[in-house]
Length: 198
Image (cartoon, rainbow, N blue to C red; front, top):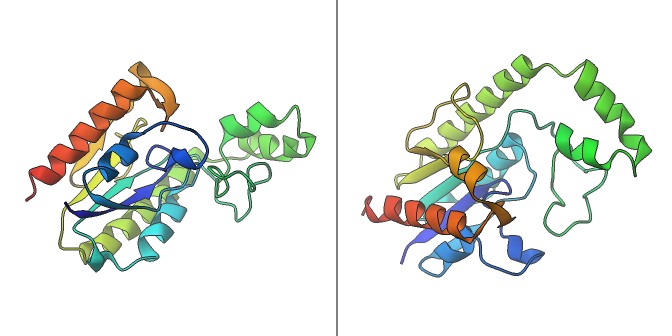
């Protein structure tokens, strides 16, 4: 049994704070002592802050689930700030677009995304934060597994990275965005990684 730290976005968060069931982080917690700091909807900067909030030396392994470059950091989300799962969310276009009919005040955010948002700049800033994450993890002597669930080939490349984009498209569901089979596959891949680094 290892002490494992999980940081990241909704693909790694503990969804049991809002929904019944078991996602892959909960499955992993049946085998290891898991500290899960991941937060649904958070951007890469908040993932970096998660890693800075703890003494990494107290863990045997780390999992970092990375997120989209399209997220805009906010201290307080205009819709989700009271939600137990998404309370620390950052802005992303698809989410705001979905809620704009009920919340007209969000039109200014839609206007920004549609007329002013610069994706190249966002990817550049995302890359700089990923570099800071890599720097933070350099002091950690144990195994680190990075993962993504989105198209990642044009973003920062970490060592030991798994991309579950194909799995996300074929096994979408209600727990960590996956169905039971998808969560089981991720759990097995993560477990294998830590078994192979003994």
